[in-house]
Length: 245
Image 1: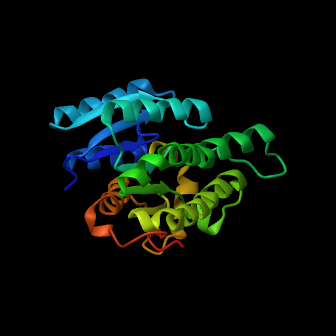
Image 2 (image 1 turned 90 degrees about the horizontal axis):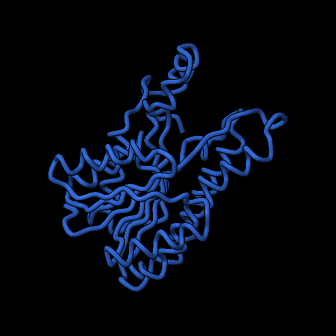
């Protein structure tokens, strides 16, 4: 399905990013597994892909750093000649009520979740436009659609990703490049497993389908958006949230 395609997935060492990397590789793509601090986790993702006959490489980059991102993309293009699929998945949380939220925690979340995606798209834009093809998939969140108490920074970053998605989709549509956002809801990951049982129970009550989603359900949607079946879909925000939004 994705034979001869090169995919770059940011924050791909664990959770949703890991599942996306594995899924794209399983379907034929060569996957660049980006990580910032979790080298061991990223290497394990690459090993798993290679053990299943796929191609992958782990590459470190703090994507919130504009210059580091520029160098990262330059090196990727020098080695692979192109990127066909960009998945902006990297994200962090620093939850707190806004009256208690520090400027540092606000800036860190916006820099990683939103500016990081800008950096990747910005530095790859010339390559995408030149090849007149490509799929950009931004991982937003149901929190960016609905808002969430205690997550003003996270919700703002994920809502910003939706605006970024829609604007870039309009800019690049005439060159055949599709730009879409995926908005996961309550997904079973290391991050959500750390929540108390009471918190999980109250969250599940908010989900019409009554259950937590899994990373495969998010990755399968990303796979569809990365493939040729989505060639006439752009500027959309698609929820994987069991009906929450």
